Amino acid sequence: MSDLVSVRDLRVSFQLGKHKLVEAVRGVSFAVPENSTVALVGESGSGKSVSAMSIVRLLPENAIVDPASASSSAAPTCSVRRSSGCGGSAARTSRWCSRSR
Figure 1 (cartoon, one colour):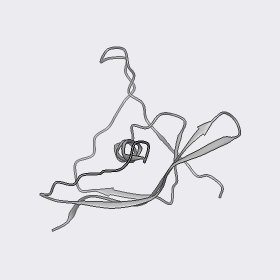
Figure 2 (figure 1 turned 45 degrees about the horizontal axis):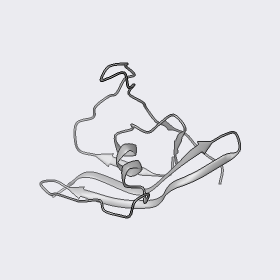
Figure 3 (figure 1 turned 45 degrees about the vertical axis):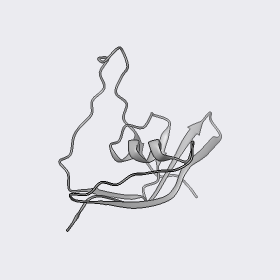
Figure 4 (figure 1 turned 90 degrees about the vertical axis):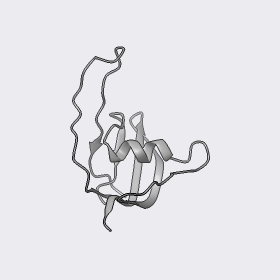
């Protein structure tokens, strides 16, 4: 059985101001096998939502996903475009770029 989604060493940071970078997710890895149910559980603020939003690339513009993070999916790829629908909230996309260590 193959994995529907596989994430390896996910690292997500947020740029706060010009000189502050806050790490929100550090080294998360998991897989979701086909025909399975998987729950991502953790304390409040542990990075569950950021992890999930990074997979579908719906993080805010100040999010930085480390390019060394690996994510793959056997599911059909969907695209997100900016719009002002749904109550005025705009769909947002994340930027995937490198950062110095």
